[in-house]
Amino acid sequence: MTNEQELIDLKEKLDSYLAERNYRKIKAVMEEIPEADAAEYLEGISIDKAMPIFRSLSKEKCIEVFSYFEPETQEVFINSITDEEISNIIEELSVDDAVDMLEEMPATIVKKVLKNASANTRKLINQFLNYPEDSVGSIMTAEYTDLKGTMTVGEAIKYIRSISDNRETIYTCYIISPSRQLEGVIELCDILACENDDTLISDIMETSIVKAVTTDDKETVAGMFSKYDITTLPVVDNENRLVGIVTVDDIVDVIEEEATKDIEQMAAMQPLETPYLKTSVFTIVKKRIIWLLILMIAGTITGSILGRFEDTISAIPLLVTFMPMIFDTGGNSGSQSSTTVIRGLTTGELECSDIWKILWKEIRVSVIVGFSFGLLNFFRILLITKDPDKITIALVVSLAMLLTIVIAKSLGAVLPIAAKRLKLDPAVMAAPLITTTVDVCAMLVYFGLALKLLSFRL
Image 1 (tube, rainbow, N blue to C red):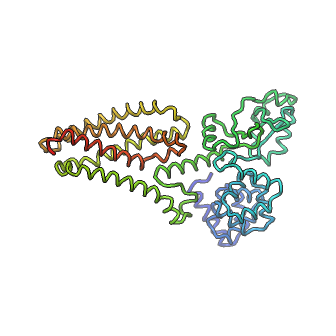
Image 2: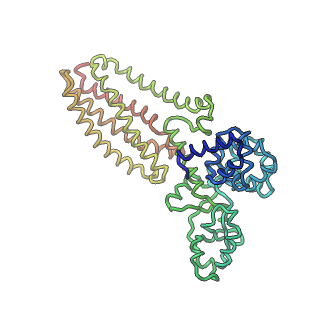
Image 3: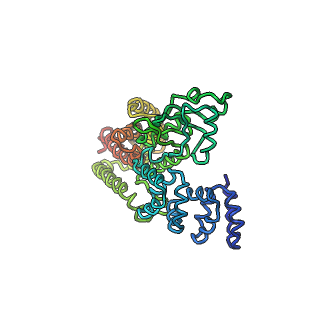
């Protein structure tokens, strides 16, 4: 792993070699550095400079570097290399990396790549491409290590050695029947630790297996990695036949993707499918404008409610000075609760069935916080306000603060769960929507109390 300063030094060294056209030294450096850093460097220079360097690398290094390219870079390289080179890349890439690449490519590029793939590879890729986008089947790899229960430990070790170069991982092995039914799992360390080479694999394998089905949601499967503290998960079809595995590096990508999507939805915009700097202005506008329009329309409701209390505001202008404080506190309180609940729903810590427990806890929290803030503001208003009815005004503001916080935290707890019950992403019920809803409720509570307790001034 190279740090930022090392990357800068490395780039400067490679740039100086490139200026000298010293491809021998460039190759030596590129062969030694991590594939991700090599890919980053090649992406930062023009294709006419990058291509000779890429072609000079060893076959294994080329494949690994190519897998780290952004989809746009992969497309440029595919258009610049020969059919034979395309064939070498697609045959050597792991299936899940090949599928990820093709999912981002235009149809013409996909056709060109598949045309240069072998029949078996083409069949396997097409099979993976047919899985739903959000399913675990779309991110699994078929390059797992499978053993037979009838193998001895000695036979298993010999077999693992023979196929180790072509597998995603050899540290976790899966035992399958002749009809590919998943029967057990065993760690490589347990095989090596067995002192008797004649021991059958079926005698030392684990039959209690954590597994997923190809159609399971990949976000749910990500939760299984955390829950069971595993690095590899077998994926079976509906007949319990082993069809692939998911490794922790695939799950890291899923977690990053889901976190990015949730953050964008919590900020009231639709998720971007491409990196920000590579997304056009009009695409960004399209992703953001719908939610902004919805929130603007919701804001007009707040304005119309405010108009109904115009006489109250005219009679007691001092009330206006406390509105931002009450509304902002309410919005922030609701955001705290909604963020906590959304995270809990996402990680699996909370379920929709926990709604009453969650609501009861948030009500108790909100009463304590609301009472504390209300009391603080009551004495603050008494100290800074010279209005003859400052005690009543302080009571109105304090009660409004208490009720607003209770309402806000209750809505922040309930709305994400309601969204999940309606098969929506809980993240849509985040800060902007909660804040707008709380503003409406807070305004009704605040001026409702003012009309009741300060009616003699109106």
